[in-house]
Length: 567
Image 1 (tube, rainbow, N blue to C red):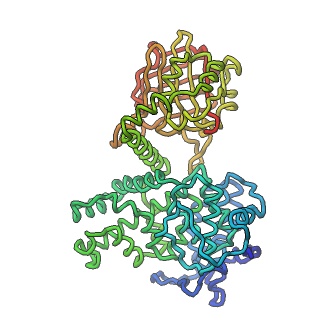
Image 2: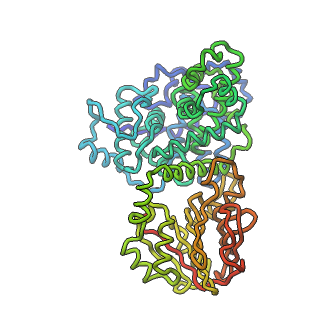
């Protein structure tokens, strides 16, 4: 029968002081082997004096989230070291994960209907369940789950794979499932995972091999800057070492190495803030390991040089730093903002994608450009009927510049000044929820140019961790183009190499109630006013483009914006 924890509200709010011996395991679900869990603090932390502030309650956190005070919640989660056996997590974790759900009104019983659909029964089978292909069999970490708990984890992962067929590679999904099941029922754990997987604003769980590679390469790039001495030390003692081999396993330092007590406290923050919490913890682990290597013979160069990756995991298993100190060090790292991490991640992804294309055989490239990447006859008819700017020749040129996956979809005219009027408000109403979009301008001098915009225009409203709207948004897939009188494509400059080009080269899209901008840094590639009548174009650092029309200033005859059905 499904396990439900319905009366933990009172328990979850009684969090000050140390629990009695009889209540040591009250915070855990029935499918947990509690005898294996060390609930007492064995890290020589000074005992409580009674003067410490009381730990915050679930009700307080719930109210703050309802008031939209996410920053306050973030600080509470970082600072409140609830005991590992605290019953607060049975309510807190579902609350934190639930805020990322896109299907806010998941019907009661949905999970059990899915279980019945996949397995033909809701009874838990005694036979092993074959796990989905996206699971890494080596890292199906059960932690302290009983054999029943492991079977439950297997079933959850199967149902999630059935419900989310886009997940093709996700080795951390199983361990996260196991951790959730220590504090909640099967159905609650599934709903939590659904929220983490569906999240749009923050990254929690990688779901493809590309995302997985982007993640570890992002950690490696951040480490080169923020743990420079540690990285240099490893390279010095192992001259032939490829850093990639060390960082490919970065998540297992945490998920397979750290004691469970540390993991639980990290998850308190992770379920609210996302993967950046794990990035920070990984950097602290590197620094601590580096210091230990210089003072402890167990981690001497001769002992670790042949397998630094495995040595890091062993070091984590023996870590002598408390969870509170580990997190304090992680959140004390300066210059590691969400925006900074996002820029590195986007740049890494674009580089991997561009290299993937370049590494394809010339035959495949010729084929994609000559046939697969051309507009279908239906696309040609659609645009001919809708467009006031594109000739068939220009359409073929533009189509060859689009990402290959986008050419599979039918174009749809979302907005045109000819039909919908010249208003930025109307533009946003008709366009802002579509991704990607193709924006084309025809000037009164008959110049034709525009941009492929990779992100939704709605992102102009997205706020950062400080509650401030981000000035620029978008990704490196965005590009500029000119069709008349010159024909040229101007991709993001970051695709061309690994060097750090700075913030000014990553100003893709910006918008507010008064204007729209595409491209920035020493000029704006495209700028339009709120009446969609006048604009200007300059060279900019993001795309390294010349002005898209000779005069620089232009008057708009027609603006058209296309979306892609099914993208």
